[in-house]
Image (cartoon, rainbow, N blue to C red; front, side):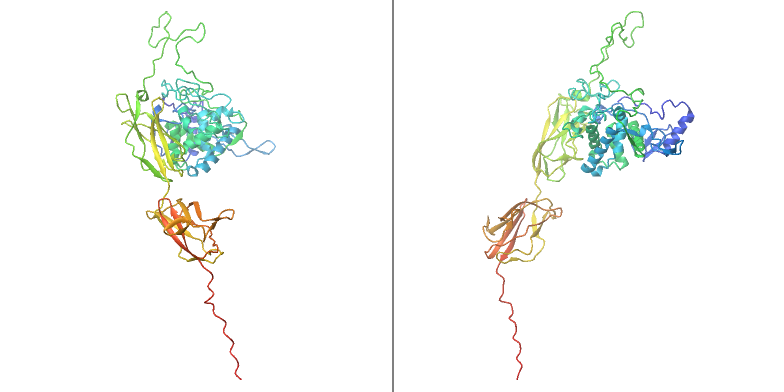
Length: 576
């Protein structure tokens, strides 16, 4: 990415005195874990400075430019001051105001993440801070009622000329550029990231990076991946740096996060303040129109204008020749011929468990040479609820010095069966590499009763006790294991009995086989009540689990024993 420019404490600050006041104010109101250096710039105390990343390193924005303006030095919620009539008047800071629809999108995204990933502890103020730095809150809230920006918000094309080099990955679908990618929308996602991170935040059935509800929810999920806990400063720093890999970016976002935490208020859409300084130029950050999708040709844009001279050309009186910028140098991605498996072992896991093996893919040239610094995307395909660690179905990693990209660990869901993980090279059309993975059902190898009370009943009656069992696997609790209970004819004949004890279904009808049962978190299962018909005798209830554990329980149906009931003793006669 282009070199980052120093951030401004206050536009137009021209004296040492003003700068000193700014430093003092920032020191008094810094974010948690943030300190102020000798130049008045905030730095994360426990953040490791990260060098500017290449395009292949991956980030939400492709490390595109961002607004560098800092929050004002005054509090976002000053104390009320009396008016001329003595009535208190609240003087709210303009910078603290967030356009109503944009603010609503941030808060809805926080609510959604609280339900989906409560351990992430995502504050909506973080989304607001990133939204401020990326697009000035959708350019001051210029959005429609459904949250879609009134005009495109696009970063510059990432053509390697002062920016990262990311060739087109979406055919111009999102950014209108079929040559290079550009960051899109209020949260500035590059198309290759939006392809897997995109979400439908407003329930219209579409995932549109130009819609603030969709973009805010996508940013929330992006920041909550990798099991990050954003209440932890280290994880918070990592999440922000993953959005745009720049230490200055981290510091700027943290400044706005702390500012918004101190107080905000809703303002009408379209009336927000748009920042004026940007990391690539320090000038206007108006990127509402798409930049050209083709490199400049050097030809005059209007009749009568002169073409630009070639760098280093003659300054004489002759007309200079049109300049043609050199083509960007080939990236490592451009040299990849195909992906090869890098020794991935068989991918199998029990439902609910983490796969012990990881997928490894190697990027190689046509000559078989390993290629480092290539971004590889792994996508879970098929009818499965298995995800990568962090709950996502797509993950991207970068090949190491040996050309190998290792996918995050897979976390098996509850759906059993086969699915596919597909590896592709981001930014280059080479054949995908598919890996087969299998989720097997949960099993138990031992099944026991939790009680030893004899199970007896009179004909036509109801068993007083219910059968409860506990399943284990290798001596550990076997939870969520499938269980079947059948009243069989005998231990030697597992055919369902047609007489004797029975269960009742929801309609009260007699059933002697129960399926669809599962053990609870403690490996236990209590069967429904049992009843007896008029047949007496000894019967067998067989309980089995996935994995082969079996337990036979004896049931007895017999008439009540009245022979042991003592007769009342005759009263003693009085002797005469």
